[in-house]
Length: 326
Image (cartoon, rainbow, N blue to C red; front, side, top):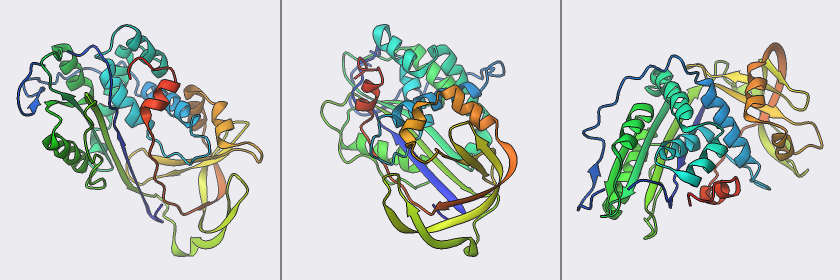
């Protein structure tokens, strides 16, 4: 974590999904949305808060599976990738996805569409967000027009039928590079023969603090990890203005200068692990904790850090109750 700015990049790739999508075989790659005109939908009756609660619900579930690790997750990215594909699901697969994501697909479309529409100004600067789907082109695989229209309307998604050759590999990596402002050069080294679909959400966030850490506020100190081990670290100290507390954990909110974004830290009491604390939360309760931030002077110290994390989402999502899609 830099003293004066934070960059977060996230990419979601899901490989083998058996959904109710069925394209005509052809050689080369095709943009399936080139003849689809996104409709200007009225999202004013839906609240983007529903998207936040759904993302929090999914993120907490994934966090519960990260025993012994320091996970770095973008639940909004994962939510967008799954919700796009949910529009092509049916039967038990659809039922599992709606249970996991906590809302009927129509409600999720509206909530995520409203969030994306409301973030249009941020997406041009602070937040870069893009959705894409790549399908292996096969003679027995046809994409329904309603699927294309919904993803264009609500997700501004590019959808491509491709031969899954080296050219497709270059296309996917170029998409990610373009939509993360160059922060991720590539995400794929090869495309396995069993892959039939890639869901891609590329998200990049680059912002500066309202109150940056100055040189004198960063000093060497001792950081104690959850397992009790200690190590030297550059510790960043500050006085923050927004306090969080929910009866279990306490924390603070540190706003960014651009848009309506903020860094939030929550610290469970001594003796309670992060996973145990997360198990007490629901998406709605976490949203309530954030909404209840109150003005107060908070003396905060945390280590300067960088973090990277990778995981097999298919394994995690099956464990959370979505086995039929994989």
